[in-house]
Image (cartoon, rainbow, N blue to C red; front, side, top):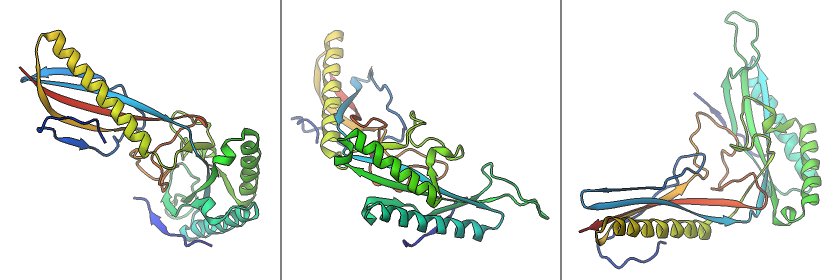
Length: 274
């Protein structure tokens, strides 16, 4: 049985100009990619923003389940969840999953959230204990749809008997993946670095070409590159008011599609002109 922790909720294209200042920012905190095409001319500076994308084939599927327990007594809620977590681990072991083939998050603990109320002197609100269970399906499973369907159905049924439910089964927890509220399995790529670089290069090239078009249309001449700023749109950095599906996972990009994952970057270039 794993140790359960308890927490209380309360490389760009080369530029020759020596004046370049390039920044690679952290992924933008946005759940979905946005249209960032823009340009402006101000103070003898042309500023252009463009997005770029790269597409990868997912090599990991993640079935998202949840373990939830509710009680008027906090200790009872946590203890009930611990029993379900232990039963879940036993069920996964029985299906042949090694410890590295799944992940169970630590317990999150809180009050309310639409749960039942219990009679008492202070009309105590229920205490809710929640854990997420991530079951991983490797590339070999993803390459055979029939095999993935059968294997995931077996896992869901075994975990249901252990006390876990699909994360989407609870309206308090919200959708597993934004834009795909019915999805039980989400997909990712283990090593996205090459695709991130590709998306950034596409974005920078588009921004550079657009800046040149602006200069040509205005009849001005670009004197040199002043600045390049770049980053990602989306990714696993969505702000949350509390814990939810995907928390605790190390992967950066997710999709509801089993055959395509889009990685989108943004670049803003600034050119001096005369």
